[in-house]
Length: 182
Length: 132
Ligand SMILES: Nc1ncnc2c1ncn2[C@@H]1O[C@H](COP(=O)(O)OP(=O)(O)OP(=O)(O)O)[C@@H](O)[C@H]1O
Ligand code: FES
Ligand SMILES: [Mg+2]
Image (cartoon, rainbow over all chains, first blue to last red; front, side):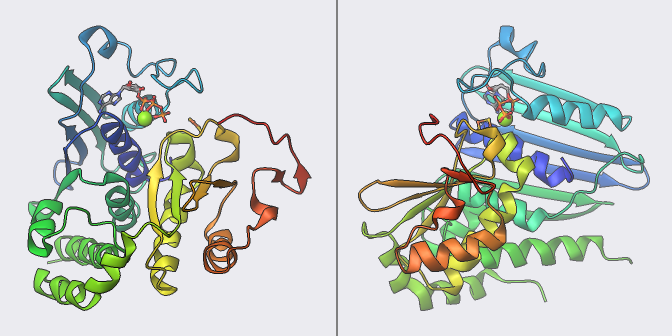
């Protein structure tokens, strides 16, 4: 994938397929620690202990239309190529947590890319599922929470162009703000 | 200036009637394939463009959402358009530019853009019995 934000979009699609009600996305960036870590946690159906052992093997998928599952193995390979690590933990009936960590300045680390568009696409995919996205950049943080927006608007779905455009700008401005030079 | 929730609420109130309309049953439902293959091939810009065009053309009876695997990785990004009778048209190798045309021709005027559909790929007519 050309952007980490595309991996994020992809991994959260697994959460949707697992019928998650809430997806927690955390991005931790630190120049001082030379770290770029993405954590995606959901409360979906989970993965059995037996299956978890080989879930990042590209030949594992519950898809019936093709024999290989690519999402997790690609994300793992990206992290490991960049001097980082990949972890997945899961419990049946509880949820799944995926962590991919990169050396921030590694030459092969692709950029985060277009987070506003990834979040908008996630929201369009999520139906009633909620997203909490927290981005920590050199100790400054930005939080986006769909529950808060739904409560304010008294709606159950945010899949409306006007709302989506607002979310897109909200994410863009919020990230710009925390990444501004002091 | 950071965007505020109050501002969002104002937009929402202004548009409330339209939003209610969208949940009517007469419109189209548009879905984009969001398996890894679809995302890698460019599903995200296609999805965002659909949203932008639905807004620009004020198509209050069209919803856009994702679907999982469509079973034809090589033809991604794939967009499926369902009408109110659940009849489906499948567009393949989609791009934001093609989205503009599909919106104008199919969703506004009701004319299927045959050249982008599954039966015609890269100018060649392919087997139409490909199973999803
Ligand atoms: N969050 C999750 N909750 C439950 N099961 C999961 C989750 N993430 C992955 N899985 C399981 O692990 C398998 C492998 O996931 P992976 O993303 O690598 O491939 P895929 O989703 O099957 O296909 P692709 O991502 O290539 O479209 C999935 O088929 C699914 O069974
Ligand atoms: S995984 Fe590519 S279309 Fe199903
Ligand atoms: Mg996947």
